[in-house]
Amino acid sequence: MLFTDDERGGMLPEWAMNSSVVLLTLVSELLAFTAVGSVARWGEVFPRRTPWLRGRRVPTAVVVAPGAIGATILTLVFTVAAAVSEITDTKTNGDPLPEDFPSEVGGWHTFYYYLSYVPLVLWGPMLALLTYAYWRRRRAVTSGPLVPSTAG
Image 1 (cartoon, rainbow, N blue to C red):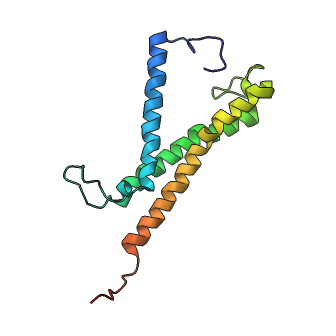
Image 2: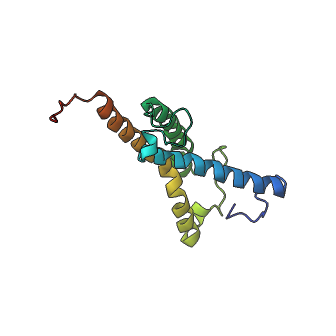
Image 3: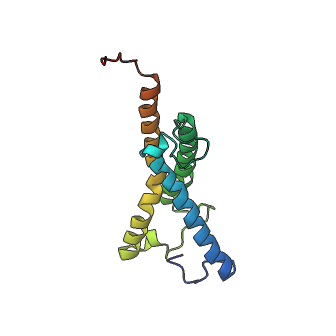
């Protein structure tokens, strides 16, 4: 939408376009924030403010399954699609990229385009690494050897 002359960003009415942009932004931010649970305490033990679950361990699969599914989807949608688009110089629908497309123009437009899309392209693979690290850390805790207590 940043590089288009059409201020509405397409064929949708202005209110629908603005609402969808805000909604997609909020949903993607909320989903991205759930990855913080992979490295935060609340990703291992339910917080006290959680009714019926407070203080209990978060089952590893509850974090790993959605993380793996999300990483796969994000990698396919953004990483693979971006690579294919760049290699073939086509849009996702198969049409050729226009000459004024930001990656084709050069200069500052191309720099800003790639600067904006690098985090999006890396989101899936980074989530996959984070999910794998969480799984390994939690697996080591739940199935590791029992260490005898020296207290006592």
